[in-house]
Length: 223
Length: 225
Image 1 (spheres, each protein chain N blue to C red):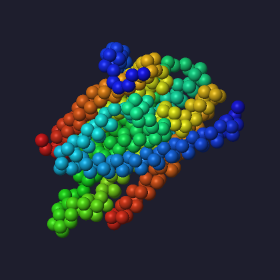
Image 2: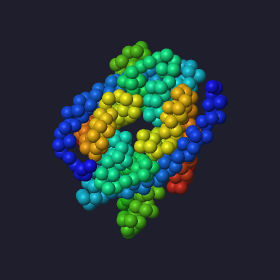
Image 3: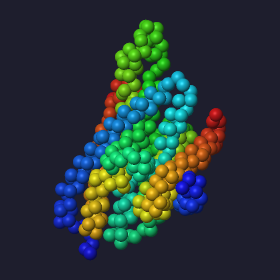
Image 4: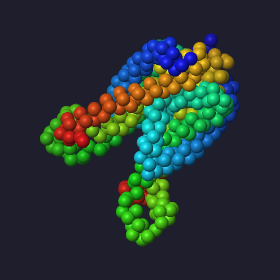
């Protein structure tokens, strides 16, 4: 069986799996961005309860393995009466895990905004909420986007793990085809290539574009 | 089936989990050693004068870095036998983890080497030191402290990625938990125990890396005590 015949027969299945992978990626991306914003700000709160809640959350999710969290969400939560669908469990686990890493990026980004900006906003009598929203947040984007881009590529790679909790994504389909045909080189090779193309020619250019956009927004032309 | 946490079951599976934890630590340690060495090779390959070779090397690194470790594991485990190379799951896992994290490690090394200021090189040239002597006595002692935090982070990273090895049948902690859970049809205790064991091992490790990072920054004069 040539490679072309292989693609002809199983290409559609792999593409359908790719669609699911993209869905998982987009959902968990949205979730992790929201979570990291919230917990990044909480980490910097002066209120010790809020701050320590965020610290515990971040340490917990960064300290355990993603696979363990995923299996926990899918196989253990039903013990507590919460049954999540495989897709939901996957997205939630990915979002929570990467949200913890993202929160640290957001925290570092906020700390990297020059202190003079805080003081200027303070002296202009901005309310704390307005200070964050109008002065600090627009300035943190150019700082946090490069590390966030790395994290998002890691997220794309991590979506492969949801196959292990029976989400029918690209990895799952590749494994499935492998167990039927035993053409391991073809199916895993194709899967690797698809992941590579998604990361290299779709996700990374998109994130670079965001970086340029963010830099332009605050008047720093990025070369 | 009884709901809720069962302590008797927890105590029953605890010895089994402890042994499996040892396996996990061994896997992470061996994988890390391989990654350290593989990273060195990727670094050397980056520094060759040939442009084509550099480009090929960079693309390989880029490819390994942007594809999931899970599929790489499957690839190595299922494809090598087709070429007549039959390796055990352990060996496959170690090779893949070594390769995957070796690419990351080469970036850490590169960053550290570039972190040594260029004037150091110029001073050595002015003093007529040989390249080897410059590396051995001037550059590497300065680059090493810069690389320590990154190297430490990936040690923790590898440790947290070892559960993936269970998918090709390496008998580490997560594999043991799945086996125990499947046998007794109770996943609550095994998976929770795995989480707790990971936390108790990786949080101190992460704290130690952070302390190292701080010490390095202090010794470099970047921050004050």
